[in-house]
Length: 549
Image 1 (cartoon, rainbow, N blue to C red):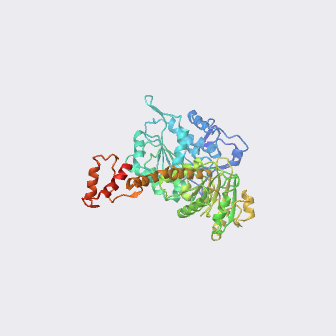
Image 2: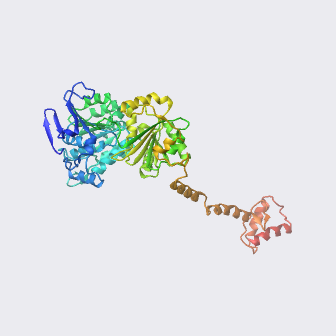
Image 3: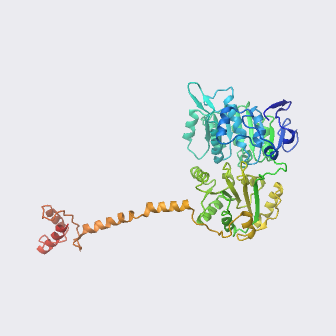
């Protein structure tokens, strides 16, 4: 794998025969991308267990990138990286296909950074690479990954040295901070189609210097209707460029897209020998559940002994909000994430989920794209996915990067036919899910749920702590007397020897009959509370409490 050999079709990785299921050219196959295209299908199982995969250094990646990856604990390549890096480093166009969580980001990110930093064009602050992604969350994640991998890669000039600058461009954030970053100079742009087009049309984003273009999660961009925007963006990028397209699934429209924008690409697929679309390390459970019992069932599943972070998928935004509310009332630490939330709220939810402050995320399909968290142990399909591609993307949130995971799908009676189609397409082998309730014995056994688990849990310690601190801030002991002192003070000011004061309040400070008492008596007389010739008794009554004060 450390070398390349060239044939009349272009570059091809020097892979041993036992690692390749097939390498061929074709003209009419469903996976074709042109007369000279070729497909490389690798046995991912063979690429992991039987042999030691090559390191990034062995594949020729520059030392600064290797060093940054090493600090993250990343030494050797995954299957998709092992196959794509030799092609991508050479500048060839390619289509990279692998299941979610198999390392597609570094599959294009590492060669992108390598080529940008070693290219002939100087890094003068004009964008040299463009990565287009479908969602804001994925934009943030990819930017973070590329930034961490490039933190030692030099750029700039001898007079003004710096490292590679990677900038995220996406909607929901002020234009000013993004235009300011572009004005300061950026080497790699990661963005969503809409905001990229806006800034390009306004003249803030210059794409004429881009030499590497990447379409990540291309199938999702097609599903979201971004194809016209992608065509406009790529039309503004020089034709002499390297284009890489990465995704977990490859529906027909993706092939059409590749014919339009890629030049004789190599289609690389890293997959299991039986073409499974879901990781072998992910245990899949499918239950036929009643809609009225789903919440109770999920509440018990969330109490499984080995559960870490969990993601629950709903079909609609409203369902996500309602399920979040229901689980929160039952004592779970949960947040929603969907398209109706503003960007700040979505980022806060993801930050809380990544940090562990919240261990359950209720999401819709689109919002969940780009959530790259390795320690998600459970994925729950609260509603049956619409198709097999949606199922693959949902379940791909767990069992990532060599870890194990559990995927649970709840199928309503009305979704029976839809599930049969998904099961058949992915060879799951469970066309008829077993009928399951929140009290079913097999549910507790299969998912390692404690026998005494109920539909509610006690408030987590962190939530109780937050509640206590809130109560202390708003109703602690010092606050109550502070409120009581004011009426007590007013009472002392308005009474004289525990007797009711005259209608007009007095504030006489002295008990010695100072001259200051006279104006107060005059004010009292002007108010009409007594006649000008007040009786001595009434005057003594007024003077007595003054003396006490």
